[in-house]
Length: 610
Image 1 (cartoon, rainbow, N blue to C red):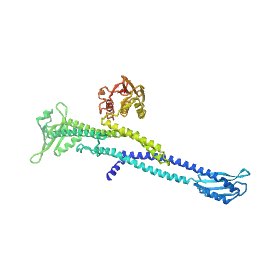
Image 2 (cartoon, one colour):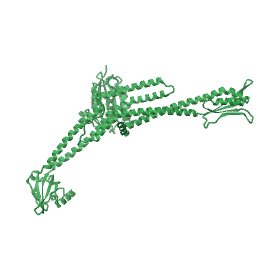
Image 3 (cartoon, rainbow, N blue to C red):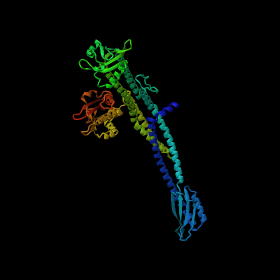
Image 4 (cartoon, rainbow, N blue to C red):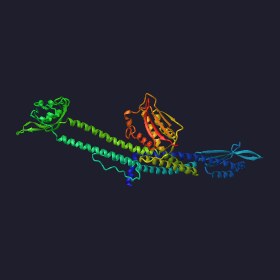
């Protein structure tokens, strides 16, 4: 039990917790709304029942009460009032004689409620010589306390039962999300966070049961593993090259030198001439007298001069000097102080190396290391984007609509069942809708898996114009936010095509989004996007998406449909490549042409059905 609770504790700040919160909030809101509607209906029904009861009391007792009041029979009136008070919700009854006397007869029973919700007065008549004469007034006061208590009990039972159901279902959704998605995302993130090329860990393995067919997670892990191996080989080769270079640099020496007690050069070996240095001019001069960076780097030279004045050894002190042709060169020298037999300082002896090429190589190495760090950061970015794109975008977006329909039907069914007289026909229809939406979601998931596994698409006769019409509402916000004028020129006579509807929608969405993004920087002309369909060569259907954006760079036209090639700063370069694969799998063609004025047009041709 410890491991699952620890996993749930880690998810408190993740997408699982946010999903749970939103499901609970939405479900409780829906439950509260339906509960309030039901309580309002119950309240109105109970009030009508009380009002009807008051009317029935007046009809049943009016004759006897009128006779008792005519006879001034207080005892009879008290008995009848007592009978009326036994009825539910009635708390006070009063009978007042209608007379001009100063002390009319008043008979009452019960007690005045603090809040009399319903008060009714009914005239009392007595027949005298076949004529009805009003002899008094019957006043009845009823309370709604019992109604309120019943509504409260009903609300408590409904909210408690629904809340418990929602809580259990929400945690089940959180558990499924954790088991299928978030724990694997956490494992990928943890692997990347602790990944160190200097000490590569074992290959990434997700803790889950083997699948019969590879799914999105398997493809992500396989792609990451391939990139990881390539990166580790490149890093290993780089380290070996760097180590060899350092070995050469540490052991090599180009020429020798020596200085006297005043640090003036007394000897320079002839090998210095092979590197373009005329060291004969340096004899009798100090090192800082011939250095080209003495004035530009005073701190470095101040420390070096102080060290040699203290007669300390130094190693690989680098400074800039001039060759015989005037060009700048980097020199690295190492020196050791020399003392005579009486321990008097007599100068330095050491070696020198021309490290100009080494410096250039080090600069190149630093640039390569910078590119390596950029590549490593890009790897982390691509892994995150691929994971979210493959899992969240492909699954959550595609099955969002059937899941929403399932939740709506389930909530409606629960409310119909919660009635005192359940509407089983509606519940049966809702359950049938849940089953259909479940099959629909399963079909979408199966098609996404087939696309990822490069399997055959699920083909059926499809109206291309209808596919375009279904996609446009999904892109309405993007069109409006980018101030794009969208125009459709759909020919009504195009034949149906044998294709997978979901994959065709994916292609259309990709082309429309590419067109919108291509016009994002356009400010000197209206942003217009035209989607057209037409019959071509008798039985072919051609869909074209034309924009007025930046167009196609002729130098990059050949790479336009290659995988991982993109001209967008945040793009992955997979949209057009995947779209072309989908169209070719349907036996069609996918190409692009540059417009005569501005922008480009992408064309999709599919074989029509006879």
